[in-house]
Structures are given as structure tokens and as C-alpha cells.
Image (cartoon, rainbow, N blue to C red; front, side):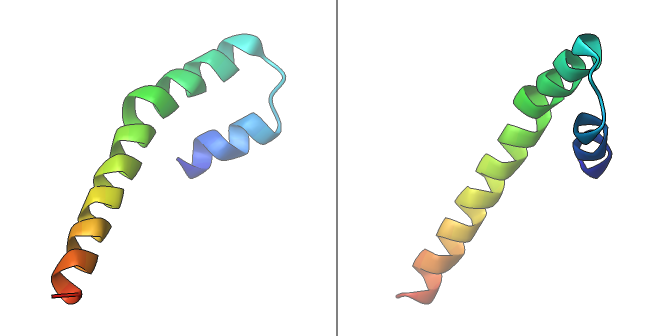
Length: 48
């Protein structure tokens, strides 16, 4: 993820940007959603 972030900061190549966008949609978003679910579940357990 950090490599993709660094590449988008210094890239003006549309093909590279589309490649990174694909990884964001297919990999990073699901990872963040899973993390959100885990954190939400932990918070629910702590508040009981």
C-alpha cells in the first residue's frame, strides 16, 4: 500500500494510476472493511 501511495504521489502516467486504482478497489478497500468490522466487534465486546 505504501508503495502504491508513493507511486501515485509522483506519477503522471494514466496506466499506472488505473493499475493502482484497481488494487485499491480489489484489495485495500476489502482490507479496510474487514478491519472496521473487527474493531467494531472488539468495541461491542468491551462495552458489555
